[in-house]
Amino acid sequence: MSELYDLIVIGSGPGGHEAAVKAGELGARVAIVEKGELGGTCTNVGCIPTKALLACSKKYAELGKLKRMGISVENPSFDFAAIKRHQAQAIRIGRLGVQQLLGEAHVDLISGEGHITAPGKVEVTAADGTKTLLEGKNILIAWGSVVSLLPGFELSERVITSDGFLTLTQLPESMVIIGGGVIGVEFATFLSELGRQVTVVEFLPQILPYDDAETAGFVRSEMEKCGVVFHTATKVQSITDTGSGVTAVAVGPDGEVNLEAAYSLMCVGRKPLLFEEELAVLGIAYDKRGVKVDEKQMTSVPGIYAIGDVTGGVLLAHRASKQGKAFASRLFGDGFVRFTEESVPSVVYTHPNVARVGITEKQAAEQGLTVEIVRFDFGANALARIELMGSGFVKLLFSDTMLIGATVVGAQASELIALLGFIVSNHLGKKELDSFILAHPTLSEIVWK
Ligand code: FAD
Ligand code: NAI
Image 1 (tube, rainbow, N blue to C red):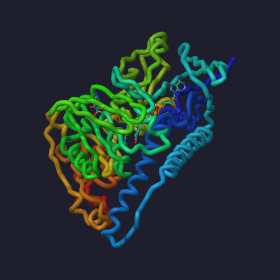
Image 2 (image 1 turned 90 degrees about the horizontal axis):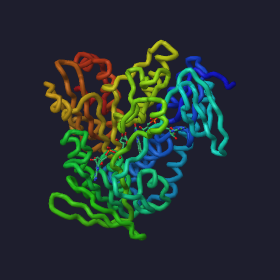
Image 3 (image 1 turned 180 degrees about the horizontal axis):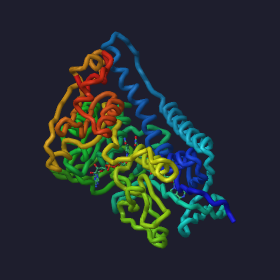
Image 4 (image 1 turned 30 degrees about the horizontal axis):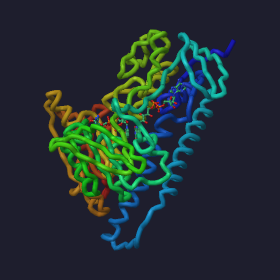
């Protein structure tokens, strides 16, 4: 008879490991099952490696600005092998961090693929085929997500996804990116900052289709300054790997577009990883958008819960991890940690960044909400000018005096959004913004002056 756990977590991404750690800290007996590397998509092929790459290209691109400050950097260059070592190191440290957190919370780590055979029972198959049966009072599904591919298109050595890009050892000279969403614009930023030729093909009339037209237009024009070519409202028809490059055919408003590049990156979305047979046998409700859960993250089968990307919605690491913490806090603690969907910020790590929390102007218009929009420009901020941060703006959306949404586009938008997120998630507004003091000169002053 195996040990009876209070909680068995399947998947060690941000959702799974944060839930396991929080439950362990609250005194629960917890096991976490992982079939791949610790840390999931985020640590291994998502947030961490991509931001490590973008950190390098950003520093390189910024060298060009130094001349205006009287600093000369003659013939700057970069070493892609060293950039890859930076990426690998960021991943390695991320995995070790997860391992340490799990260890400190006394969580049992079980390597292998876990499948729920019945409520309370998980069978784990290790890499060598050995099977172990775990028993638990509660089970948490945190399977994560996988890349979506366009029907009829196949991957090859030169037609790759973000996973494939992250394994390249040579930096491609040129790239046709299919999909002008988050992954598309982030990789376009990295490549163009390192001087590579990038073309983005986007099916919808604007890139970053979930954003306001103004925001997406701003990002597009900043990226065009870096040489990126965009074809919006354009549908890709075919991509051919010629062995030495790729050719792509697309159709846009002005007819057929023929493109050539060294590689093509497919990034047209991700979808929840669903083990459909298992879900069907257990009677867990799901559809192609994900496993269905209630406000306590419980599936349609009592005792089986799900969090993170596998439940669909906005696929973000911090959303998964907060859901995980809130879930464990509710089940084993005092429920002190709350998760509210409206409070999830999102950041696109282009240079400059786009960051938003709460509702956007576009969503307010779609929902017919009456909002007051207060706007600030980076040009009006002393530090932004002194440090040559470039242009950008902040848009605050108020309902009466309460802040219900904020969009920041500009340098360090990813940091500025933290304060605004705190205000939105605590239903605060103009009064609170008026009654605290920001140091001068700081970029934060831009949000309310
Ligand atoms: P995942 O991180 O996908 O983890 C799921 C884990 O479960 C995996 O380790 C998997 O191996 C394991 N697993 C699945 N099934 C089983 C099984 N049966 N048995 C055992 N183990 C199993 N989000 C951000 O917030 N910021 C970013 O900057 C960002 N950048 C990204 C960049 C890229 C290129 C990509 C692809 C994604 C990015 N994301 C980003 C999204 C983010 O990575 C995901 O939202 C996040 O990782 C989801 O966490 P999760 O715990 O739900 O699942
Ligand atoms: P996405 O949904 O952001 O963008 C996909 C884009 O592809 C959309 O603009 C869509 O209109 C376009 N598209 C769809 N079909 C197409 C076609 N046939 N031809 C051309 N374009 C087409 O998905 P993406 O970029 O793959 O990223 C997946 C998810 O990963 C994101 O939604 C996000 O949740 C997560 N992510 C988050 C990051 C962050 O937080 N900074 C960074 C990277 C990924």
